[in-house]
Length: 516
Image (cartoon, rainbow, N blue to C red; front, side, top):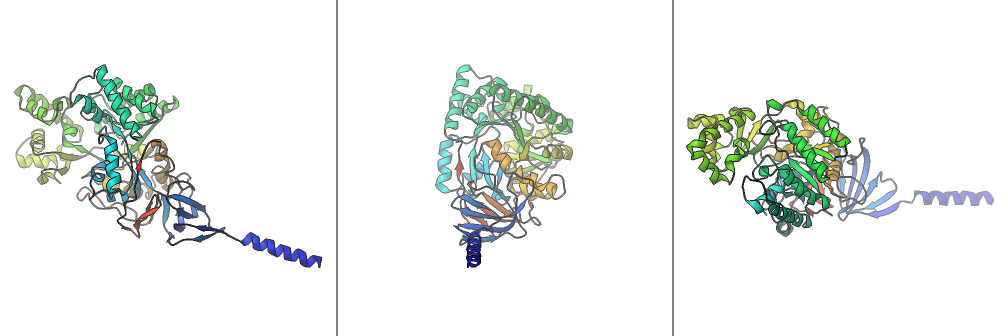
């Protein structure tokens, strides 16, 4: 009898041990290879989503799930959604017809940062309300642009700010930080931001520091235009040290043959600053061609002080014209020559797809003169093929460098950055897959100070992508830069599906993210 009782108790205990916990989830992801955004080794895990959060991450064996949506991710990679720290997506997000943000969405991007290069929409509060009103396809975080603030106070004047003007700029930066900006960007290469000296920038950066924000900078020089690349990086370090806030160098590069292979020196400078306690990171896009406005690329800043009308007044002045043309010619050479400058977007559509050299030949002009004929017909953007593969790979392999697109109309990076990096650098063995994912998710979230995103972890927001490791890649190129990337099978943003079986479902699941 005693033995029978023991056997019965053993059976009951065994049945109790086999009993699974019940869990109701909105979305269940099974059988995928999961990279959690932090670790270097993936796992076969089950993920459960409830509301806008990740509610379960585990092997699933101890759970009895109840759900109406199961995603079988067998043979696919499951990852936190990518975070793009440098975009110009605000130009699309403002339009109800383009606010789906599909060029970024199909790269696996679930969060974009806007307000880069010192240029931001102002005031921030109005644009946040606009985005909330018509809906957005991805999450968005805001930077306040130093150039925008300077223009509000001083216009486009090439002069030193007075103490009163600096105080007014500080007040406006505080206003935008109060509205939710995660930090301040500078475009010290571009007018009017370039007219500010270092001390002026430090004064504004101190306001950002007091609000727990970051300083994101397009360096004053990425090549040999003015103070030089090394000096521009040293200026960024000085701002970080004196204002005591994190520095993030946007789209770090060595632009122009004169500075090729200086990445070794820059890495040393940055890592020495890190040892001194300066928080320095950078982002980078995986292309050999940069892109910017034609005016910004080749016209000297002093000549455009006051705006486009002032530029053409100076250009028509016989005492200044030759100097302007000489400096434009020098800047064209800095960019690799007129045959390496491709017009990728222009108000006058006849220029698109042609090099500056081709346009100049059609006009019967020298390239420097053709620049002003192009600008007279409206804005034009140019891609310049002026970077070395050595420097691109060198920066890419640094742990403190994360992925960004600098996505803007006309350059394929707007549609292809993250999938291109996977295709060209992960699949070819330049960087490990886990490094690519971690440097597109958790490390970026940490740099920007965006909480509870970028990691596949219970309690974090459910921004999740699932892509096919065989087909994930870019299709956009310089001849046709408007092709969506391929291979993304699913995108979940704030717990809701946006892409299903490779097709956008029309849902606008993004949110505006604020500095907390």
